[in-house]
Image 1: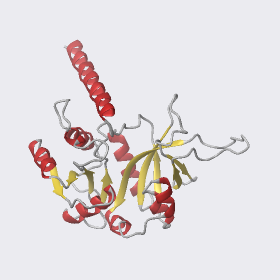
Image 2 (image 1 turned 45 degrees about the horizontal axis):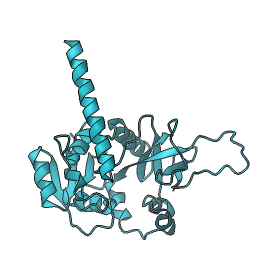
Image 3 (image 1 turned 45 degrees about the vertical axis):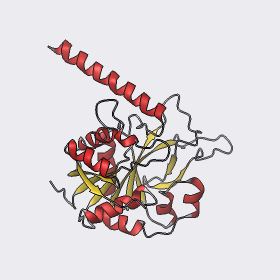
Image 4 (image 1 turned 90 degrees about the vertical axis):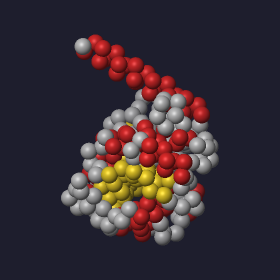
Length: 264
């Protein structure tokens, strides 16, 4: 069902030839391929009217069709996931007023509330893009360069994203300063801007930080940040990370079965 102001479509880019863990989207130690877990998580979001997987691999398309998902084929030569999204949106015939949510194909534990929050942030602002951030949990290291940080203004719009700890507190004065925010790599775009984005020149700061969202800010566009609570989704780039996901999934399934047994 289309929402007011256009439909809201999640598109999940799913490359088979991932660099660090080739074929990861089809790993199936849980009984489901990884891409199905991602798809099922996205389908629980209330704001979405459609969930589509975008891939360049016929093998992925076959698996998606086998579990009843919708798939669109895209070319293999995209420089990044956002570019693949733009091609998918065009092939799906989406209008400029529609909203596309970029759900990462290797994050099977994305909370549905994060997707809904990103959509609300986009529709409730004049920004071209919306995303999600979380406060750091106890024990997490905000100086870890593998964890992206975001600084926002008083209006909730992103000022900067970095792999470094930002802001840097020079003299130790913390009055009025919010704790660092951990960025969640989930984006909502209006389709009209998505078309524009892929024509924008790569930004020097984007290249330096290896963060493609900095292209949006460098060119003067706006990213609205929804600050949420919850657990940051764990991306899967290595065999060890996949094994940890399988372990969490099996523990969750056993817990759910025990809960049902006690309820009878």
